[in-house]
View 1 (tube, rainbow, N blue to C red):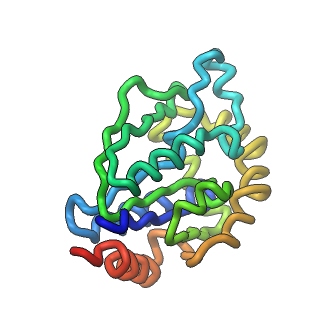
View 2 (view 1 turned 135 degrees about the vertical axis):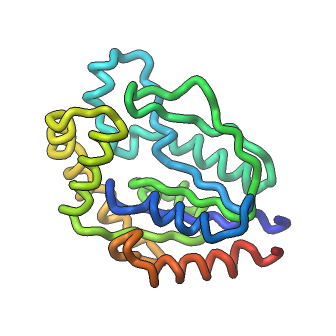
Length: 209
């Protein structure tokens, strides 16, 4: 790791399949050689607000994330230093007390809807992949995820989608794909595309292996 880890960014709309792509790439690499970092773990901890007030926050705007801290952590991993990452609880909209300790690995994958929006984060990423999936599929996946995993009501999901998710996608997420090195249609269903990403990461990220 003399040259530091290979930092791979995976962006795309909510429900596009970013996490699936990241996990499939990671699963195809040798054990212990890759770390996945979720950008949305860096949501600001608004403990000054009540739960009801936190539920009304715009989580799809770049200002909702402490991206500067993520950039610091990635820079530390580049230097070969371990870091303690935040953990975010999506049911309470708060950061969890426990931190996630991460040691440097040859490959670090950063995934999130706004990963390509801010230049200071883009500059850390050597490979940038945008997962491009049809809006109706993304919306259905988001509804299912929030119902099953985040204890949300359908009414709250619908309200958030129309008030912030869709407008912020059009304003920030969709335009950010111009920064991508590779646009991957249909996310986890694109086996050929994922195989290409895996081959690239193996070649560039595990040279010393």
